[in-house]
Image (cartoon, rainbow, N blue to C red):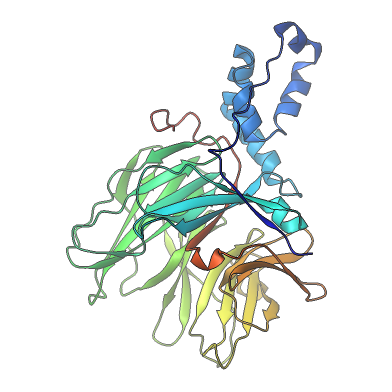
Length: 391
């Protein structure tokens, strides 16, 4: 069944009236049960209930509750608290609009409501990645020119707060390419952004830095970037590490940086045989690092192979999951609990069933204008970190 697309304008909706609870009714339920109930509610409801009483405000705002709520939401098999963020061009080419839709509604084939988001102030935002409900937005695309400064923010659309990162700074003066990755350092309980510039025409000039949310500053990586590398795409976060592809003399390789010790290392790709691999994308399917191998040239060989590393760091665990017999517009986004792959083909999202290889058309007649897509989990992260950038 095809999913219908419904556009929603938040400015036309009526303001919700916060639910008020008489103080005498709160003690009826045990505190443990109240905590259990609240931990399963959407963030939008939690933000309202913060005003119910001082005790509820303290509970909902506590780091322990925020982490527990995040864990429960992440393990929800119906994807109730998961959303897709879509970036579209705005009225002028230098501006864009951010919209979101419910991932659960998209997967179960119901009517999908696409809402326009109130994004952080700025011009054109590119969705670079998301972890634990935080979205990393970068101004502009990957090309940076002389004297152009990239703006980077960490944004939680669920609580409508964002953190503007300090200026990255770079010693490179010529036209450069800049790439980013965003992840979570569980060992230090810290969110980090990895950014690096390289100059066109100078293979040895690569400059990398790491931003720490705890320290609120950029610094050079402890271990320098390997020489003569040219990275592609945005960093994919798996197993506490960020991953990129880079091109060697004959084949494409995978490299990663561990966010805890900040060491770089190579990740062995699948064994392709003697055939050259010219086009390769990195994605995360489930919790596994995955590669998308495209046929080349696409008008002659449209097949798209999807490989998954089932045991991280073990080359022999690379498994070819399936082959799509037609070219896709972007890599697959996720594998659902029903063994369905969400991907984009042309202007629409599609659900590809791994069991019977059937295809179910999704929504979207306007997705040809979509420039970036992010997969985000509703959370309260960043609630206590920043207060000045609420909107």
